[in-house]
Each structure stands twice: as C-alpha cells, then as structure tokens.
Length: 121
Image (cartoon, rainbow, N blue to C red):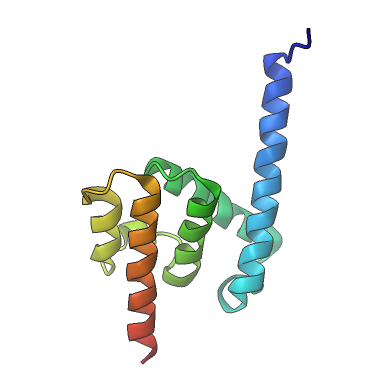
C-alpha cells in the first residue's frame, strides 16, 4: 500500500500553493494592468500572499472566491477590508449575516462593482 509521509504532503501543498500564486499573479497582471501590471514581481507576489492571508481570515478559501477577493484588492487597495472610507466592505466581511464564504464574496463583489461604476460616472 502506498503511503504519503507528512513531509511529502507538505511539499505537495507548497507546490499547489505556488501554482495558485503564479496563476493569481498572471491574472492580476492581465486583468488589472493599470493597478498591478507595473508592480515588480516580488511586490505583486507579496500582494497576492497578503490577499490570501486576509481572505483566509474571513473564511474565504475557495480558489474562485479568493480570486474575486484579490480582484477587489486590485481596485480598492491592499487593505480595503479595513479602510474606514469603505465601510461597506467591513460590513459585508465582518458583520454580515452571510455565513457562507461564497455568498459573502458574491455580495462583496457585487457592491464593489456598483461602487466602481458609481466612481467612474
């Protein structure tokens, strides 16, 4: 019977994490070139890691949900979740009755899109 030692499992998890970070770096460069395209690779990777940690703190761990969280970060700033000028983000992430992470991200994304459109007009 095949057994995977804990050290091996850790290596698999690290490799998967790195691949996801790579995809998110490429995603942000492609879809948010004005906000992220000019960032040095090291800084953009740190931006992604910060977003991963912040989203995890809110129970947001699904890859698609984390991607949306990073998209919002790219538009509203690295610390949008604690920015006093964005109380809607704090309300949705911290005090919302939404317990499901995907529902929370969908609500957050919807409000963020609306706010972005309002700012553009």
